Length: 147
Image (cartoon, rainbow, N blue to C red; front, side):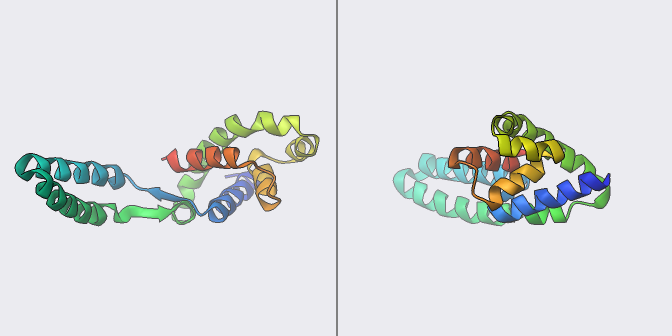
């Protein structure tokens, strides 16, 4: 990674820490599906009582399977140094697509973007509460969905 990319990776870590995002590593979806199947199986076998039993069993199994829910910050910190450049580029491109046009419309942010990157401007905006809730939610969704 270049020096600029390393700084941006630090910005990405900061954004993840500030937003306190949690991500599920692969097994989370499987756990949810399994819990649903347990409830459905309980309903088929024993009706409403079966739904309660199936729900209890499904919840227990889902909790044990979904132990791989971690903070995005932890996940990024655990990324091997050799993979950080690739991870940085994926997040950077996704966030750039979402936010660059909006930054260009604001004179202050346009100046910052001229001397920095989308991630550095996002960090600046987060520190000063300059991002609207709707855009924060979109950013959070981008950060959660990238695998």
